[in-house]
Length: 145
Image (tube, rainbow, N blue to C red; front, side):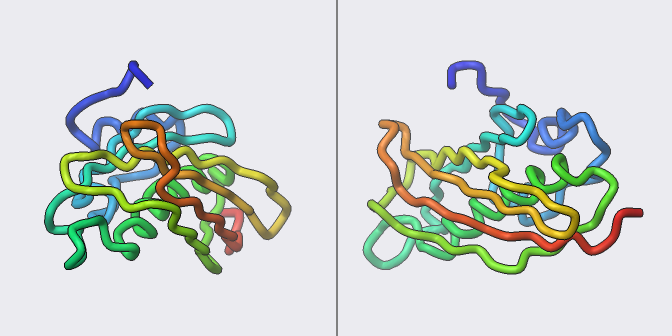
């Protein structure tokens, strides 16, 4: 992962070949950076900020789930470029804590896509390439306009 874009999340969001519009505030406020995009796969990085931490000093689970959502959203949009979709669920499993000044690096992939559903999975790693959390989600395709 040495070829990481740095800086402006809005410009990096625009690297996606389809028009996703302006990145949502949830994406930019978490300082999400797009590292890689390939068919059916996206890699993003999110810094672990003090404001994301629980009383134990590690990134709170809700922020980790939100980080996964920041990867799944653009990935679903690339898999269904002419459609709108909504999240049905995100299941997150936590494997080890991650602390401030580290970075949560998420690799998300489309596992299956049908006419009405998209199923995706992801793994999140720290800078030492240790598994921090994993997640799965299912999106329902609302329309194909």
